[in-house]
Length: 461
Image (cartoon, rainbow, N blue to C red):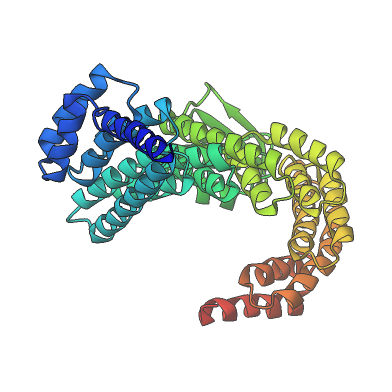
């Protein structure tokens, strides 16, 4: 009985094995395996392509197709496409696919680095090869942000700033990497500065004339007028008052009336319009506005990033958006009253529109928050100094004597003196201090300060 049972079970098992042996795939799939074993990879691919057309749910066929395309035929795009189809059908081969993609990602990154390192001004084609390698790597691992940094670096070397910006921006969108995005903002600022310089260079003569006409106003001395505008085309003495005379500048349709040595009236017979091409100026403004948007985005994500706040201030200033900047930093002060940089930057903005009281209040608060805040020391002193200069100039234009400016210069002194202790090798600060001493009639101190500035400059510090 037992013997008969054994033979029965053996017969069933054998039948099963025989049945399994005949449950092979389609002729295409079976043939593809044979061709792969024989290293006839092109033929294997043809058969696998036919197989997946007939049986798109065959995950193994998709996997084999992708593997052969990548490893044997160097068709990475084809490999990637096959792997994507495989994973739509089944996750059975996902770990193998991840490993293969990772392997090829490393290969293409290394190849890109090698090509980029070979690139020079005389062999720029290697940058193109590096870009191609990195772009292929990105297809293999599209969620790996560092790949896009490699791409951006290659485009930078090539001089393709637009694509450099595009891929750095992609990194920000993926990871919110503030340092990367600040770099994008810096690029826009630099492009703005470059265009601004182009504007100045193209319009240098007309801009100089415009400035000169602005500088010559009521209160100007004859010697300054001659230095700025040159000799007048004609002069007319006032017969009734010999101290008065008119200087005529035909080129500008300008008449200046002097009483003694000072201008008391300025008149244009017709408005003078400088011939200025503003194309580059507006292009520069567009770049600065892009930078503002970027630094604002970083500020929203990282409100305490002091470097970014300074960059934002620069971008706003260059974009001539002082009013908006002031509003933004007023709110920043409300949101974070203990942030010294917000107070400091708001102080700079107030000073830029001659709101000296507001500037002094903000710089003072910044110093309260950080008693060693050297930049705030300097700018508080500079604010008092600028205020004094404005008062002095206004009095001169009216032909009045007014010593009110001296109080502002005196208020500036202790702050400037503090800065020279902290930054003894800064020639600019010594020069500013010397100027204040001179305006206050403290000749000896002025001489020492200016000599110190001269010594620092000569030493190359």
